[in-house]
Length: 152
Image (cartoon, rainbow, N blue to C red; front, side, top):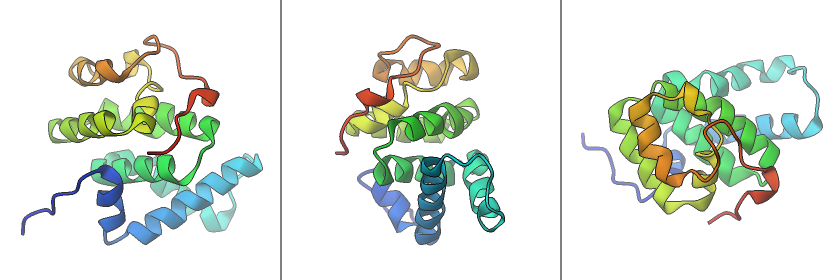
């Protein structure tokens, strides 16, 4: 069965059979971060681990990253996602996903902002070269939260 052609990663994330679960998990993670409590509630632990370990499933990780960018305007939270989950994803990114990351970087100013969060030393050279055109920060610098672009 052929994969549907999605115009962008948000449409792809929303079309997933588990899309509602991913949204629910991400909304809970965003709310928990906003509350400033470092301890995870037991009832959310599985959801939060699913988000943080999703880099092992690149399609799911890209869906979570895209949903985060769509569900919050909190630049500090998104910088944490960019320097954490996105960096982990880029560190082991299969070649077939590089094109998707680059395409989303071309399409979305907010995704380009996220691509400025990972540090160069943690990204394989071919992946770094693919995302370099989207970066305005230095290799070991994150963008300031207040520079987060509006959603597009």
